Image (cartoon, rainbow, N blue to C red; front, side, top):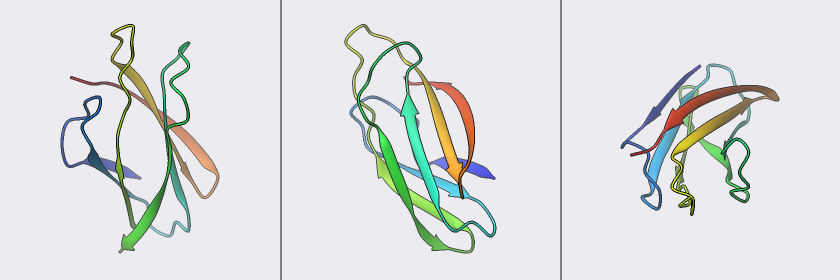
Length: 87
């Protein structure tokens, strides 16, 4: 699996998330902030061909100023987390 964005993730700035997962049937991405309820930020990525899935996503602003996120990617039910920070 590989994950790409078309821009550096930043709150309230839409960006395209692309996941390459050969042979996958379904890809779901969920953005969470550990210990902070940021609402439901779950996206079902759409297949774009050649094992690629993508969606246009937007992260909310955290009122406390935090910028640390975890992206959970589920490929056909197998879930993996990736920690990152926004600008």
